[in-house]
Length: 224
Image (cartoon, rainbow, N blue to C red; front, top):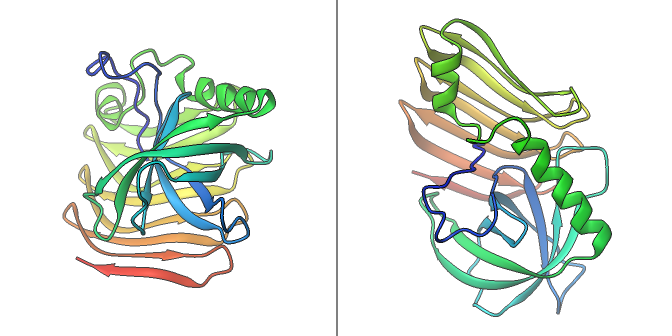
């Protein structure tokens, strides 16, 4: 999970953005049938998600955005603006703009984004771990003090499991690093602790990835 807040494309971006977490979505025609995706990019204007299915532009979706806390997810309605094949095998990058966001939900979204941006005007990225912590355990905290992430750093490079946490303390994501390179297992979890994603890396390259439903059912598997 990488947090992005950069001026590199300021002409294209109207809002600061972050990424990570899990999102559930459904078509307005079948609201009871929820699908799960991983959040690639989030701003006050909309989201970009990794989806398994092709969704035509102008399609309206109901969205539930999980935001690392014990509160209910952020509810919104969005319109698909664009979609393209993702670098993540078997997925599509899907851009969605918000078309309905109630004031209470907007407030939760603002708090979610500000949690990550507070104290980090340049954003938070892996490269900053190497610069700021040559040795020892590198930790990031929520603005309210709870642990957000932790990883061991040796000679300026991440070693072992890097973990991200929901505000409740439940593990959100864990990914193994060897000499600053992704190598070994990666796992992501729903807020209830159920496994959402299982992935294996070898020397920085993904070998396979599996997605699971909230009930533990295998949704999709891709070998790379």
